[in-house]
Length: 161
Image (cartoon, rainbow, N blue to C red):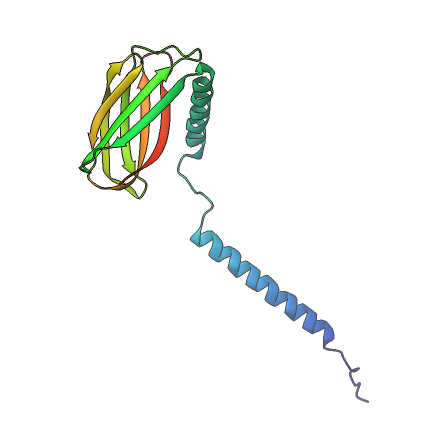
């Protein structure tokens, strides 16, 4: 006598097959993900973290100085550049003498038109220079004053018509 199977005997195999498909798809996605992106976004992350910590410490020291920096940027009327002036004062409003101020001007779109200049002393705590700029548009001014304590850095974005 032959035994007949009960109806629905294959239902458990549907579950096993569905889970096998899910596991196979997940494994293939894991393999593809590891091949295309290993998980490392920067080289030498520990060293970069130390540099970031040093930058934070420098910013804290700069804040403790309490300096007041006034930056004035005036375009030259003929459109060939700008007059850049900075005034440095301590927390009591007294001018800070003996600084050397360097500026770097870059375009936000790329470093190909970058310019550097030294601002010359132009009064008590004041420094200024005429900086030729090749194009109109947005510029980023990065200034660093050295000579009294820690270097003091400022940033300003401006538009040259």
